[in-house]
Length: 243
Image (cartoon, rainbow, N blue to C red; front, top):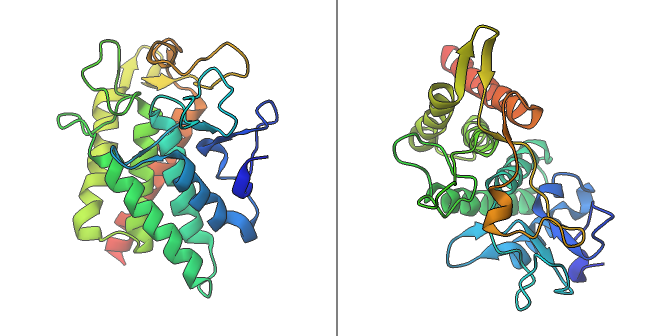
């Protein structure tokens, strides 16, 4: 097990922590899990979370000094933001100290990722901090996750609506404009990374080439589902306006 009890949810990697799995956990340990993710996975210079961490520095994808993987994968950061904002909406009001932790981590992670937003489309790249890299692309599911997190943050009062609502709506509008395409069969949501994992042995080494080698598909549930969730938050805010 990892030190500080960073909880794990991938049995094939008993010494590795993936931020994508932090959305599952036990209520009494949630704050500790988020804080450990911050401790082990957060890059202070770039203000982004790495995809994974290996305490023993043995996995092929792990940096031998830090234990972190080498790249910032958009969807893993999107999952982390969703986990934080969902927990903000679920935690009892009397748990003020824990809620304060979630809010602080959420705002920090959000501020970090927003530095890398594509100015023209308002979307985000598969490899977040490499917009000029040949073959890198604006990825749908992770961008939708950020839209969802921002819009829900506004609805819950975690974010200032006057500052953030339009930014969340711009991401959603960018997805609609750039990634929804129509053909003879109807509408399709395009630009979704099918999968990106690490290990467990010599495969999936976490390199730039690996992340850009995974299939980019349409209408896959990890993209469509969160796109619908973001739209739901979009509509909930409109409904609040009418109240």
